[in-house]
Image: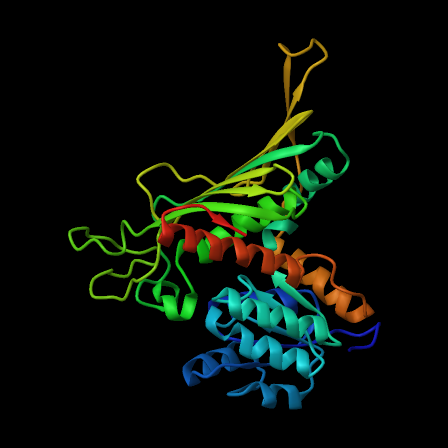
Length: 355
């Protein structure tokens, strides 16, 4: 734990593009980047050249260098290994989403976090979007009445990430579009519903683009999609029921023959709201003074800020001040993982799954 008046000493585990993304923001916030960990020598060399800090093959070497906090940005299958090691060493952890590649691994991380003297936060940065924060406050203030349903969309027209890499390899990622971007949609929707108890999930997953030999396709980085491993979903649809009767509908796709959509529609007994994560647009829907036939829509302007930086600032301030993590908690991330697992089980079974 760092002193209350000093920068937090941070190490990053996983030195790919997301690791660089976090490194840029934490140094911009004035925290101290101690070093990084990666099993790949080229990744270590690039990170050293970019940030002028030492890199290591193992977490133990990073821990010996002296860190207060660790940011874990490895492929999903390795989250457990490094998060648990960091917590056992007494370092606070910011783990990129999702919590793990499987529900069993996520449960083990959650158990370790409950037993640790350190804290763990999970990187669902969408909650830190100013428009999402305003909507959450609007719901908490009761302005929409009782929230009964959330429609959550995260659909790309074309945007399969790095075909042939770990994102499209199930053993490492744990799944495809549902695990990569769908978890953001599930987490934000459950956040707006105040993380109710989920009792039933019905879902279907498809692979319509990654497995089509007759489809000439370039991924989002322009890489040819021929002769690559793709054993995950690129599209998922689900419907979730809660113990209190609230519902959540989910549409997720890396690629789809339809317009892209990143909207969240919240329905309440006294009003509703539409949030577009792409541009931060937020509209509140109300019944006007004229009664049921009179409707009023209000566009809410919010500041433009980097959600990743805001997420980091919250995390590092908590570490610096020795305060518990109360946002994006491990237990909330575990709830998201349970929904993901249930969607896949429902798709395999061809029926709804009771939790």
